[in-house]
Length: 392
Image (cartoon, rainbow, N blue to C red; front, side, top):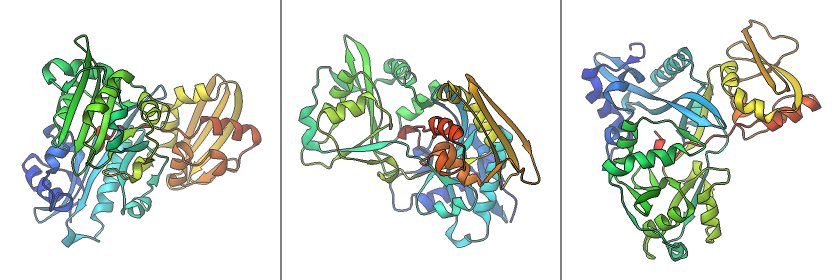
């Protein structure tokens, strides 16, 4: 069995055959068109494989993105399509690929790795990944409620050539999102089994909404715009009374869609993690110090007016991190240590993930002074939302 490596151009077809065998058997979809930004010619270095005798039998993909949240810009890698041929499992290939991915993410300075899973969570936990705070809500909208949404604006299918620039503008006004290039927007607008609708006023697009009816994405997977536009769009796309209720995905914080849904009597909701097409959100911290430095804009704002210090030692990596805050200043110091320092609290990679991303408060994980607990419980958890259109 070879070491994990990047897939070669001539091996892309063989790689897709493997991931389709694992994830799309019996489904009328294809991984290459479901995830065109992942299985793209310019992303081959991020498609990692293990082979033997010229046959690829294990695979994992990385999709590098930048997360914008709480005033921070965080380079992250989304991990997906972790697949091993059923006939060759339990030989350590998947673990080897995931270790290779972690090394690659750390080498290029990613803030953290992110994936969604279900039954495999214990496998990832053994490798330092942890389930963290929720990604958002899925409102379950009964078709009988469609009549409660006014449609003051005309709604029509997207015309990519004329509408895409305006949709990009609306999406990039969102306070939380992954960055995309114009070409990536165009590709995502054409995903199979999905539709993009726009609402316009006086010839100008004021809102858009993406509806998917796919195996891997189902419901209103992304939206943006004014409340008038969103109401018009929902009135158009909600199913007929005889149809099944539709999932509408929203971030956790207050937002126009949540206000619109609840204002029309739509109160049934579930965490995104248990909705169709989603999965548990798991994070792998690569360097706690690097992550905290990248979170500095958010931490500076949340820790304003208070002072404190905490020293942490990460068990698996030997990384020592010293976080200090005083007034409007946040400092992160770090080094690598071979033994635990007396002043440092030891925690695992998994505990570090929960410390930063929740759902626990820091005071539930660490033994903190009153001042430190008051500050860190204000600063964390750092919640973030990934629009389901970006799920891989």
